[in-house]
Picture 1 (cartoon, rainbow over the protein chains, first blue to last red):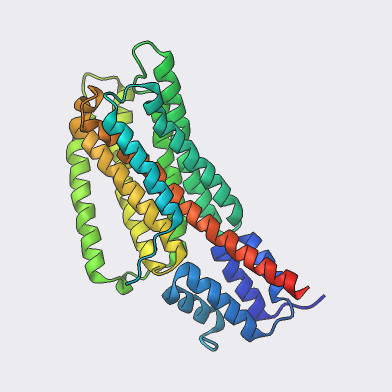
Picture 2 (tube, rainbow over the protein chains, first blue to last red):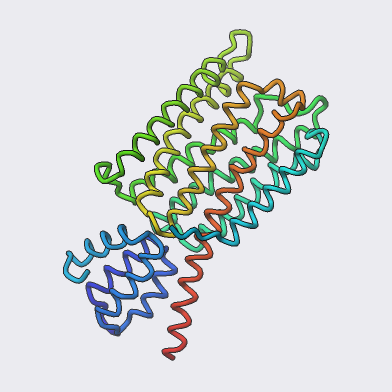
Length: 69
Length: 273
């Protein structure tokens, strides 16, 4: 079984926090084997729509330590 | 600024306008069909709440928040059912205090806990909140507090009434004070998610609470005219009904959004094979 990356785990935790466990489970399958940039792009997309640009940036920056976004 | 009017909002506005027309046309609101409106919409709000909470689950903070707020709506539904049934079965109509009052009051701790979860999750930094918004919201809260204390709490105690009646009446006043604080918190949470779909839920809850508060204050002033079935005082009922319709709107919007997100990603997974 493929080992989930730290970024993937953090992204799924963030999705679970805002969208609930069932959405995080579906994204778990989608993120599996995907590179970090795809994970970040998908995460940014749904987060901006749901919590607004400002909050999405703050949450994703916190998650990545400000490295990616 | 681009203003988007959602289909759900149009439907709920249409429902509200139909209700308004019925209240205007009907010579009395003391008929079972009209009295059933609050009951029906409280049940609709509870069912939509249960349906929406399911999609989030109880494990996540947001899920807990939705479930607890739904718990408050269920308490109001139970209270409405008890009130409606007892009003129809007891000669002379429903009396107060009753079990209905207990369930109306029981809703406040549920709302409080649900909004507390939502508030802590939003991690609001007060220094970053627009100062003008903060001044407006705090001023409105102070005015509402004054009105609740003056018209509801001061009138709540009656030395000739039974102790339980005094406890219930004071409970309603305290509940309204709690609701002011909760409205303030929900406005701040909604602001935190500015531009996002989640904000619509918190805005709807804040507006719903504010309308219920205004209805309670107006009822405290013109309660006798309302009980005497006089217009326009009977329209107070519409504010309470709006207090049920707004959470329905907020929850439905969020349910549709989150289920849409799930569908999209499932479709991508299917395409990937």
